[in-house]
Amino acid sequence: METILLLAHTDAVGTLPKAALEALSVACTLKTALPGRLVVGLIGENTAAAAAQVATCGAERFLAVSGPDFATARYASDAAAAEAVARAAQATIVIAPATSRWNRVLPGVSLRLQGRADTHVTGVAVTEGKLTASRWYYRQRMEATFQRAQRPWVLLIDPGSQPVWQGAPGTASVETVAVTLPDASRRTTVVGLQSPPADAQTIRPDADLLFVTGAGWTKKQADGQSHVPEAERIILDFLKLSRASLGSSKSLVDLSGEGVSVLSFLTHMNQIGQTGATPRHQKGLSTCCHGEEPHAVGWRFINERRAIDLNPNCGWARGKADVLYVADAFAVMKKVTELLASAS
Ligand SMILES: Cc1cc2nc3c(=O)[nH]c(=O)nc-3n(C[C@H](O)[C@H](O)[C@H](O)COP(=O)(O)OP(=O)(O)OC[C@H]3O[C@@H](n4cnc5c(N)ncnc54)[C@H](O)[C@@H]3O)c2cc1C
Image (cartoon, rainbow, N blue to C red; front, side):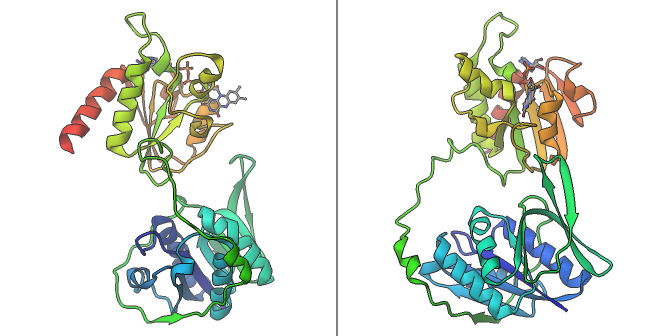
């Protein structure tokens, strides 16, 4: 019988973030399908709230490594904690969210445990009693499904690819796992966190909505003029109120390299498509973007798609969006932002 360990680190307030709850739903599914026994392993400064949050998930054991040493991401302490929990659980399968913190650490931990690790896993299934994982390769063009005989097998689940575990909180009996930190962990001290102001942070992987801007925002409009400062204001106001994640077409981010006036907050990191990102959001709204195939392939994982474009024959009209509004995006988004502002 497999022992499935859900390995999660807590967030700043001591609870489990969405990505961890998605990984937990995978672990619970495997527990039933294999079948196997489930162990929850928590790492963080304080793990009590997280244990209570998932107390009713059906785990046989709750293991925790807590303390200030485990508050923030640091390879040496995270690896030592993950290794100690995996050994205490005698895990044969380790399921963890593919956060940047775990992606960095768990492949190394799997080597210490003489196991194997796979990152960016987007699906797991049980076929004829055997665990099968799947992930994408070559910029989301090819999907592979595979099995491994080696144990423990560490699977890092891509956030946004799984349903979030839903369950009532409760009381969990937590076993503390002692970790002796290696000297190497003393070499790195986290002195604080610096992040850009919330308004400058336009890429938000956890947002429900992907808001895409296209080159049309910088093009001449009906009055023969372009209105880039106005476009900037409308887009930033909308992002601030909606907390959507900002994506862009390639044409728009490329324009800056050609000396054309562009939206100052866009970089190539925002680009969606064949040569850009393939994000996972529940909904997408495209504005002033034609919806050509190299762009639209980046929408592969967006479930509900809408677009606003002046051109009724644009790419979105050819089955790439659920709804196309043939309208002026300046006017529509201005109105939407006013409505959001009055509702907030
Ligand atoms: C090898 C290769 C790889 C590529 N990879 C990517 C990629 O990864 N991502 C990507 O995005 N592109 C990619 N492209 C480019 C892609 O083919 C398109 O050229 C690009 O997506 C077009 O961007 P756009 O729709 O913003 O601009 P445009 O084609 O200029 O479209 C602008 C749109 O705005 C509309 N518009 C203008 N004013 C308004 C208004 N007021 N209200 C509403 N609508 C308005 C117009 O009707 C028009 O449809 C790639 C191309 C190649 C050859």
